[in-house]
Length: 100
Image (cartoon, rainbow, N blue to C red; front, top):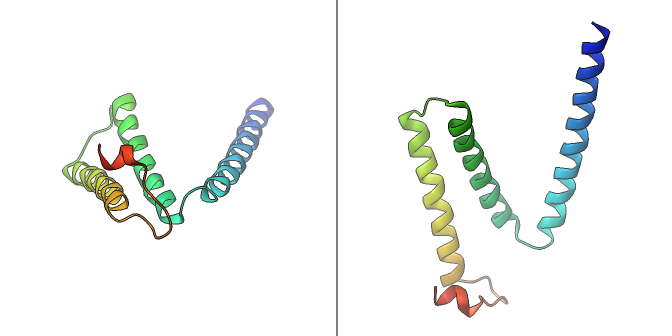
């Protein structure tokens, strides 16, 4: 019993450290990109993680989850397209992105 408690406490400590590092990284990243871009990328990340769990654990894919994933992918693509066509004021878009 005591071994199990120590194992759980160790896992909780690792989880706390990992969450803290993720939060610090998110704040550091927000100094480089806009909060909207961060939010869009975070949404895309969550969608990718859901599909990885589907592939790794064989979770069942419902019609709603497939439609949701498609809407996220289209939303991220549309957001990136709009950022190239209508760049934020005062910022230029690299020519490699415009010609792509």
